[in-house]
View (cartoon, rainbow, N blue to C red):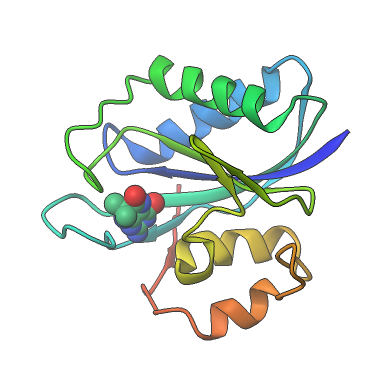
Length: 160
Ligand SMILES: CC1(C)Nc2nc(N)[nH]c(=O)c2N=C1O
C-alpha cells in the first residue's frame, strides 16, 4: 500500500465543517484508510487578500490507489462539496491536494508530486510536521528545514 499525505483547505461555507466533511468522506473511500489528520489551522489568504481567511489541515492516508486514481477521487469529493472555482487562487469551499505520495516524484500534466508549493506554504508544512516531524521530500530535504525558510503566515490553531 501507499502512504499519502493530503492537504485540505477551505475558506467558504463554514470552512471547518467543510474540512470535517472531507475527512469523513476520505475515511469512507474504498481502498483508502484515513490514518490520522492534523489540527485545523486558520490563516490569512496567501495571494488575493479580498477573500476570507482559510482553514487548513493535513491528513495521512494509506491507499492501494494509484496517484491518478486518488486524484480523481479527491476531485469527486471537491465536486460533491460544491467546489466552485470562481477565480485562480480565489475562495473555495474545499481544496484537496496530494502533497506527498510515498517518496515518489510524479510529473504528469494534471499532477505533480511533491506539490509544487509545498516548500513555501507554512499552512501546508506545519500540519504535515504535526503528523510526522521527520517528513522529508523525495530528495531528502526535511520539511522542518523548509518551514524555517518559509514566509510566516501567522497560523492560529482553529478552536472548534
Ligand atoms: C489562494 C491560495 C493560494 N491561498 C491560500 N492561503 C491560505 N492561507 N491557505 C490556503 O489553503 C490557500 N490556498 C490557495 O490556493
